[in-house]
Each structure stands twice: as C-alpha cells, then as structure tokens.
Image (cartoon, rainbow, N blue to C red; front, top):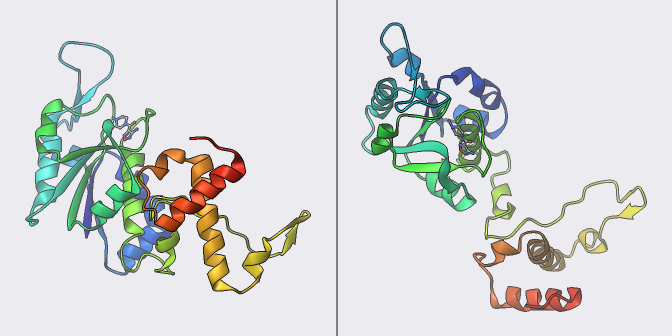
Length: 245
Ligand code: 4HQ
C-alpha cells in the first residue's frame, strides 16, 4: 500500500521511518511512503498560512497549496482514502487501523497552526483523532497511524504471528508477560507458565486477559468477542473479586 503524508515538516518523520516495523514494511516492499509539502505547491513567496477571516488569534493553512498537494498525491490512484488528523475526528481504534491497513492508498493530512481552511474538508473522507488533548500539529497523529498500520503489513514484523495476541485483537487487553530470571526481587514467575502444559497456559492467559480487561478497561468488554466460556469465567472473576453488576 501507499501512504502519502501532506505536511510542512516531512523531516519530522525521518526517525520513525529509520527503524522497526515501518522500516521493515518499506524495505520488504509492502509499504511505500511519500511526502507532499504544501510549501512546494504555493506560488512565490511560498505562503502556506494566513489570518483567519473574522479575526482572532492564530493562523490558518491556506486551501490552494493543500488542494494542489492532495491532487498530486492522488495522481495515478483510482481509490484514495483521505484522512485529516484532528481532535474533532473519531478516536482511532485497532478496528479502524485494521480497516485502513486493507486500503491501497491513504493520504494523511497533518495540519499546523489553528488547522486548515474548512473548505478542504470537502475533499476529506474522514477525520481521525488520536485522543482528547491538543497537539501542536497533525504530524504525531499521522506517525501514530503510520506505525499502527505498518506493523500489520506483510514483512513488517519479524514474528508475523505476534499480532494475534496483541491487546484489542479480539477486544481484550493482553495477558501479563514474564521472561528470565525465574525469580526477580523475590517475585516468582507464575508456576503454570513453567509447566510446559500448553492447554493450561492458554487457559491461564485467557483468564488473565479477561480479568485485566474487567479491572482496567471494563468499557472494552461491551464490544469484545466473548465465548460462552469467557462469559462464565468473567462471572467467576466477578464473584471472586466481589464485583456486583
Ligand atoms: N491536532 N488527534 C492538528 C490534534 C490532533 C489530535 C491539533 C491536530 C492541531 C492543527 N490531531 N491541529 N489530538 O491535537 O489528531
């Protein structure tokens, strides 16, 4: 797939592209990343921002350079999905990340200042937010999408099965992990993990995932994919913890 990023600061992306899953996805050929800088599409004197009509503090990104950058990015693609990074969008979820990872062409618009001229929204398919806080630009949100999408692409992960157990993969948080040594600061690794009994280990992990989700993110349980057995275990955990419904 191709991910195009429209930004005034393409250099900001260099570090995340130089290692890890994004680099691997690019090197393996499953991901192509391109940058379009509105400055390059602005006529002399290269002005990309201007004062807001109606007055008020802060600057707004002018529509024409953004529009031209967007048209350039879309050239040669029959279907492009254009995303504007904004706190007004729906908050990014793993479900959305998966959906995006199946597209052929994404265009991420990273705004600066107060944002972009509202008329550019006519060319945007979706607004996405990475959380309810204010950043100084849409670059970090675009990096978040880039990272989350890239790691799902073939060739991005050294262990391609690893995503199966990720948090959220079936709507639950991940299980706790332990590695050597067996004892650390007086704390032991749970016995079952040393047993070599795969059935028991799987059951223990499922139990831990359900318990963690219930305790840390009970909101996730409403949308999680739960079996009859999961529901039974959850009831048992609630009874053990004395949680009333
Ligand atoms: N922005 N999730 C870009 C954000 C944001 C967020 C603030 C986006 C400034 C210009 N984007 N504007 N949170 O805070 O996506």
